[in-house]
Image (tube, rainbow, N blue to C red):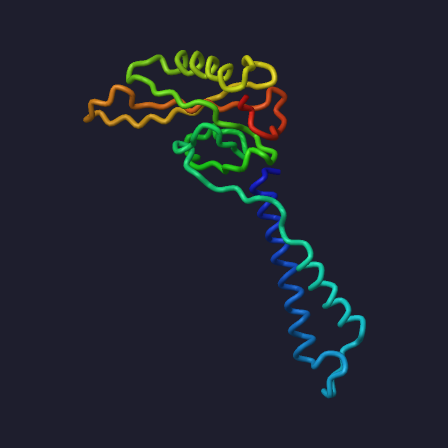
Length: 183
């Protein structure tokens, strides 16, 4: 399960527990609670359960950091991704997390490309060399390299470098990374 999905489930569970606790408190308050002069009485067991639910909800706030959603074309060197880089061209956002928590990938290099560059050749060469500079490790162990291409080509401008290769590293074993890979 992805980090963002896990976080959403944790938040939904916390909200659900809070809702149950508040409902129990409202029922207890409306019925007059224990020792009330009202003719409706509340059994000790239900009062204790309502109090336990409130105590549990207050005592266990969510401890995980939330991910922020960012357009992948705006990624910067040193940012960590909760999930692997998207392979679907219709996906335009990624979840960025603190590198101290478990994550799937880390951005380590941005390279500008010329209009007529052989993109795959340049990307492979630049990302491979950049990985060694960033981590001190060569491609293959413990990291593998992938990249995203941001082609912001405006045929009416004279921009000689309209595309950017966003080099991203992941663990060669497919597992999560913890901490930055930067040396």
